[in-house]
Length: 183
Image (tube, rainbow, N blue to C red):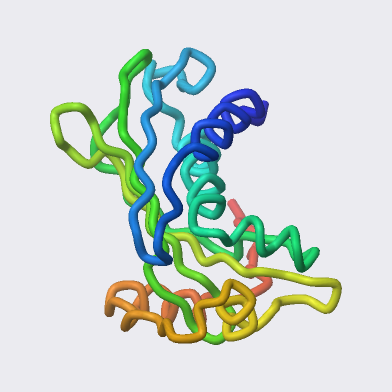
């Protein structure tokens, strides 16, 4: 089930947070609850992706993106994600989530997120490819940035490792090919 109450609480807390610049990091505190775990008593990998919403949506709120999207009657969608899992987050363990806009290209915003254990270890790291949409499809990022009033701001250079991920995505067949396995 989607963590609606946790999201509402996160947005309620973010409403009092100071407005952040477009590349600032939004930091939020969380706990791994029993309904977040898998059979090994640790944060489920799929739930990790859902919990990243609890950082990404408030980030959009405190940077002004969410207000602008509502004003324009646009939407926000995810178009891809790459995740690296390195440390377990166990039941009831507290962790910090860090979320920030990394860069953008002509169509997509790239959002970097990570979960940090209390001992300072990074548990996992994700980069999302996100798009702002309207009734015609993807809104070009130059229009999104202008609608946010950031006409004097340009994207930082895309990190090489993100560009490598995108090249790998472009080489991946779509739709996927599924050959029958024979005995």
